[in-house]
Length: 171
Image 1 (cartoon, rainbow, N blue to C red):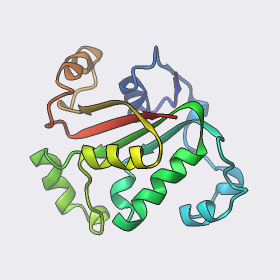
Image 2: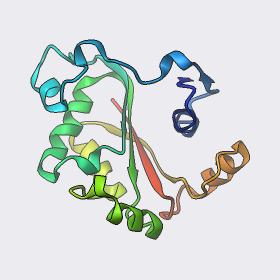
Image 3: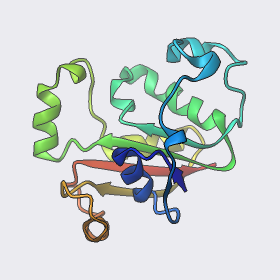
Image 4: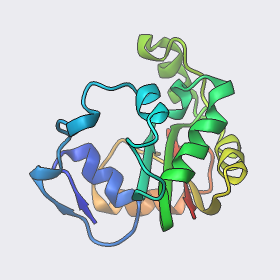
């Protein structure tokens, strides 16, 4: 796994548990060529922008709660359409059962029009889109990024008290 050298990107890559994580500054977010400045709606409406099966990995990190509820199924269907056979979709979201997360979310101006999803809702959206659930776990129990703490957090992944959760699907 290769990740940006930014701390949050590296930590997210480590959570995937897909192997050792190498960092490379060239993977930092940057201009996206023809996609730069285009809204998601514009990209989704343009069938040539993202052809079916274009990606081995689709990462949806804290995005679903910003998508209006009636549009979430089509957003997940788009993820499934873009995924190559054998690929994975990872969805990371805030955990509405964590009281600290809920408090921060409720007070964040950026999340004013957003609504959190329970992990089961994400699982149902993926299943309805034809994706196969491969893993679901709660995470970010402790605000520490040391590898030993990350291992300890994995032992708690069943407990719905982590600040976030993730769901992995396969095609």
